[in-house]
Length: 533
Image (cartoon, rainbow, N blue to C red):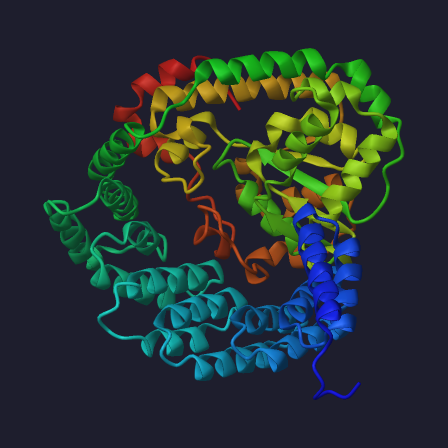
């Protein structure tokens, strides 16, 4: 049969059925079956662009980059209007370290869809994700000046610049976002965290405070403005003014969130009943030496976990994941598979089942992480799941960050968090309550797995960096690496609230910060009681 001859209708139907099967398997998560069905579809009908495209995606997820590239290019050749194939090919090139080819692929799509403004914004955002910021700026600048999406585009660009340490460019992008849209809420927060403000910048305080008079501000923008002003005034040493802004921002945010104290009390009581010393001793006897080996950094928010992860990730044997939520996902997976609520489902974990979950979690790590001996997961709230972590990864070091309770709680109160889980963070009494429950649960973990958890004192680390860093590296089971003493030079992408501080050399300026706010803290001190770090 020649290329010009049409395929028999029956063959076309069979090819389309195979394509549908492939799509069904993709939805079910069975990539191997999906790949087989899609291969059969393109064998039966080579003109099926969608089958080539989906086959390319399957091969890409398998890591077969050469064949994935061929399949995606075939999809584009057969249907030049298939935008998704261009985008998937650009992702493939980026994942392969071929950012030049990724940029060229996006340029080809832009040239073919010159009138599609929405696509231009989408592709500019994709270039931001790839770290090709100059190309992204060029594309955003080519969009119509009247388009309201410019504010979000500048916010996206600024976030990426800030996460990668380009603070001047980030501030410029955030300022432009506000000029495009007065309600570009998080842009105000981000500007405040681009640097430490000086007295010469008082005009910005006056400008932001005058904006609070605008009736058209959305509630979220008003909250962000107060938190931004609090941070700037704190930098300027105007502590009463700073506290007034932080207090108002928290009051406004507290109206829109609800913290359920009883839920936390119930979880901690159940976790203490489930994760006994006997259960964890049995798990500790199970071999678990497969690499990469995770390192877990836990503690309260704002207790130094970002600093500790930054030190560890600067080690040549470590890769930092940031605040991964993979352990949270693991709790849901185990509960679903055992049909028992978490944490009680942990009692159903046999050693083979635990090993399977460990492998599944490793497979969810990004590809670059898999080339290292150790992967650092620094989600502070993993302190809630240390019993499960000890069962899944019996040899994984657990590093617990501790900081003065008043400094910790005040720093939480001064932060507007992006994640919706931190509902306790906008009321000092709730923060103190959460802190007390955290200390109670950590005391339980120390009791049921003695010697397993290494404590890192923030104040000691910033006041004696070399000695404490050496102790930290030893506790993590690593050989000494001098790069750990210059961790601020090795920071890659940082997404946490400590985004600016994390790129500065270690300093002790935040130790005893609460003393600046002592007149406002009687209620917090009383709520904390006799708790000490």
